[in-house]
Image (cartoon, rainbow, N blue to C red; front, side, top):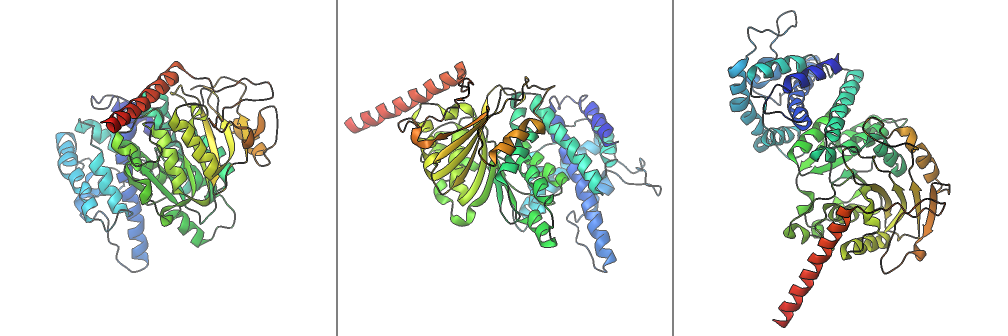
Length: 486
């Protein structure tokens, strides 16, 4: 039933001139899903309060703006009452001119940024209703209202379908891919990092919150969890930051569907925060992330980092190293050319990583791992506080070409997870002593000694990017010399 409802919603959205991509479909479904979820949550809490003989203070304190009144008023038989349910221009006007401004106002009225009220205010200040036909909007609302969040099975199915929507955005290409990291890859990273209940888990480039959701599922499945453990998982375990409005909304909705009622996701540009301002209380025990690569940050943002570069992924890696507690563990996806680039920023960053952290594992991912993105990636797994002595490499080779119709699966990564426990050698895995790494370049390229090729192939674009980076460095040096000669 749920799957058909999602298909019906997409069919209606395809008629909308304001909705042209999978990103639009997911965004518009998200805000409506969120309000439907919120209504169910409030009704459950109100019923619980009534049974305990106390009153419940509604988050949506004005009844006019509750889903059950404006979106889905019911007949005594529990069907939508179309005599009272507004539609057409009246519905569109109400949503755009009354509902969204009212919900956006929660940001100012909330007691703090970690409250659900604040999240409501942020969501409805960031996104806009793109469903311009009030008749289409009414049809979609009717489908959304059929969805139920009551049981664990219902939430599981809805979260599964929502994940499929996020995956479709990634497959759609353009900037959709940055929202989706293949879940089998995330699950393998989580199994290697082994987060524990009581540890704080952080993703500063949270995207659709795939890493946090998978870490939650992993921890929730641990045996003998107490009521206190479950409260810790809900409130004091998962933290994320996200710059883009759509990703922020999707992350919150995704975490809610996975069972986290008030996600600790902050809408901010992580890289705009100075590393010097990070204190020990801010540091995390676990970091799991796939920061965006290929992006460029402005000069004023680069000033926040000791190793200055325009490449966003390299700035994020510095941020993650700083954000880790001593003894903290991390799993970070990055472009494979990071291991071999010869520009000063890349060399300095590799040096920082191996000297301040134990980079114990490098997982080399094949082309096609990330659908809709042509770049090849590696996963860096490291622990902060002791320098690297030995790096264990694993060259992932599923034995087939990966693509949209043949994606990565959990079985493909089973051997990696098993061998990584003991850093075992195999035809696909080997270790390199850091003493054998060139101290001038800290080149960490993937070179399989068992007959595999050097797989850090560089595309013409990668080479051009490095030339541009080197030219920019040269220009800065020349400018400095001219200033000195002045």
